[in-house]
Every structure is written in structure tokens, then in C-alpha cells.
Image 1: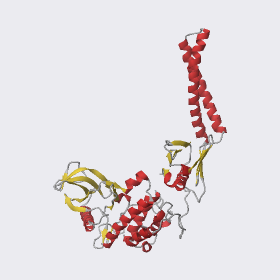
Image 2: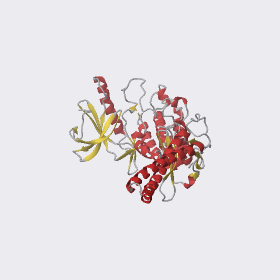
Image 3: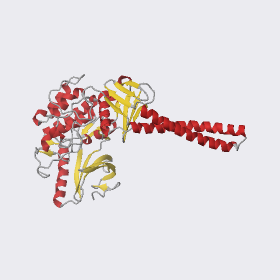
Length: 458
């Protein structure tokens, strides 16, 4: 009994599996019905991937028991998911937890991209409270990340999954010097061989909160060791959270303090109207980001734009001439008495449409090749579109700005503040990837909360 479990199976003699809630590297979580108490519970099944030897199976059973023991010590905390029971079936460990009717912070960020600073401040306060309680018990979570933060419709914030947590009283269950955690959230001292600590939990929390409020990680995702060589990106949208983020993401563990001190800093920080002066060096600005307060301009590739305009013009012109031919053909036939009206109407339509296609195609190529190429400029004040049409839009006059990228085509859609529907105002073709990344970063920086779209290239 393990990976072969199916909906409807009964585990532990009382828990009926209803559906899968999620899975990860350390287990699968099911929604189950407790038949004795007639309530829903979350049932975590520890994952065995591939052939598992007797010693590894023993360790995983012990790890599951340890998770239950850790969480049970914290079961009365309002921001930690309650664990009710733990047992093993044919050597496979199971943990019975409170079923949380909500979604993870990771799911929330996938949909919203980023959250308002006040909302993130509430999440930070709850998680710092949870970590403070865990650390006072000598428990280090070791895997703080958005996927392990649950949000309920009632506004609860809950820390879950103590599956790789350690306590002072625990014996070793992993290979010595093995780095355990999730890439991107691991503190620099752990990558250098240090031991997990309360400070490394706080660093992971800092990464989590930074992602939540900024919409991007503090270090480049494509470089897993950037935390060892670069400073985190300075927060731009964090408001009063900025001092907290800077403390939690400090490279030196000792300067992060403890969870209680971080919570005090959060609660006493005044509202931040403007970013405070930077007190430490920051990493160099990447090419994909707008530098300073300058503008970013992208321009359609001339050949791609010419081809698109030719197709657009030829289609419209061909239809117009086709209709003209359909009308003129029968008139000519009636006045000359040559052939049937139907025959002349058909050939007149086809001939005129073909002529219209040629004329439109030629006109489109000429206008696009010899006219000014379409370009889009993003500046701190707004958007400027030039080329075949010229328009300007101030960010303050817009409700939303959406950017989409498909291949080498970049489209920009705006939403006026009134009830007017959103409309596409720019479609650029043949845009290099680096230019598209610079544009997205500029929109994120200058449009702020009004921007809807990726911050950079995936």
C-alpha cells in the first residue's frame, strides 16, 4: 500500500481517501473523510520514489514520525497547521492533519503575481509568529516557501509541512553535509556547509515575502548560486516592509536577529512613502532592467512589420475590390449583352479581388518599408507609440496596462479608468528577447500596481 492508493481506499482503518490535494518531493496529500468523527482531514502520505532499501524506508518512517512530533508540539499555535495523528501502514508512513479549505501562497502568486504591501505585512506577521514559536521549541522548519504557506477564505495564514524540520533533540536522518531545502530559498550559509538554524529559516522567509510583494525573487532564478555572489535586488514596491526584507535577506546570519525581533521591526516600521537611501552596495543592474529613470523603447523588425502590414492591407483591399467587381460585373454584362450576368459577376468579382490583393500587398510593403517603423516607448510618465500611428498614454490616466509576449511578438493592451473595454494599442513583431525583457521590467517598475504581465522573460 503506497503509491498504488486510489480514491475510495480506506487507510488506517478509518480514513477514506476522497481526492488528491497536492504532491511534492516529500509526499502526497489527500483529502480524506474521518469515518469515526465524520469530519474532513488532510492525510499526508510520505513519498517513496524508486526502489527504497530497508534502511531508507526506516529513515522515512522516522522522518514522518518526527514531523508529527514537531507539529504536535506546536498544535495550539493559530498559524501552524494542526497535526492530529501519525501511523504507518505496511511500512509506509501517514500523517493526519487539519484540512485547510484554502490555497497556498504559491497558488495566489501564480494568479495575482504580487500582493499589496499591507496584505504581505499581515502574512509576514503571522509567519514570524509561527517561526518564533517553533524556534523557541528548538525546531527549525528548513523549508519555508510560498508552497508551504496556506491562506484561507477567512483570512487565516498557516505554516505547514515540517517534513524536513529538525530539532535539537533529533538524531541525523540525512546524509552529512547534504543541503536540504528548496532551491532559491536556501540561505547562503547552508550552501557553504553551515548547519540549519533559526537564521536560515528567516532568510527563506525573506525570499518568500520579497516574492509576494515584488512579484519576482530577490535573486535571479536562472542562477542557483547567485545568493553567494550577489546582493538581493533592492525592494521597489515593499513600502514599510523594506527594512524587514533587508534584515531577513542579510548575508550574515547574525545580523538577521530572531523572529521576535523581526516581528517587532515589522510592527514599528513607519509607512514608507519613498524608498529610503540605500545603506549598502547593491548588485549591478542586469541588462533586462531599465536603469535609473530612463525610458525603454522597442521597435518592430522592419521586415516582419512590412509583411504584417502587407497582409493586413491586401486582405482589406481585396475584399473591397471583390465587392466592387461583384457589382460592376453584372452591370457591364447587362449593358453589353455579352455572356450571362452570373458569369460576368463571378469573373468580375474574382478579377477585382485579385487586383485588390495585389494593390493592397504592394501598398502595405511600400508604406511599411519606407515609413517609420512602429515603436513603443515606456518612460516613468507613461507610454508613447509612434510609427504609422502616434499616441501617448499617461499611467495616471489608465486603470491597467497588460503586456503579452508570444515568440517574437509583443502586444500591449490598456484599460481606461472608465467603463470602456480594454483595447490593444501596440503589436510589435520581430522583437528580440532581450528587448522584450527590458520592456517588461520597465512596465513593472513605472506602472507599478497597474501593470499586468510578466516582469521578465520566463
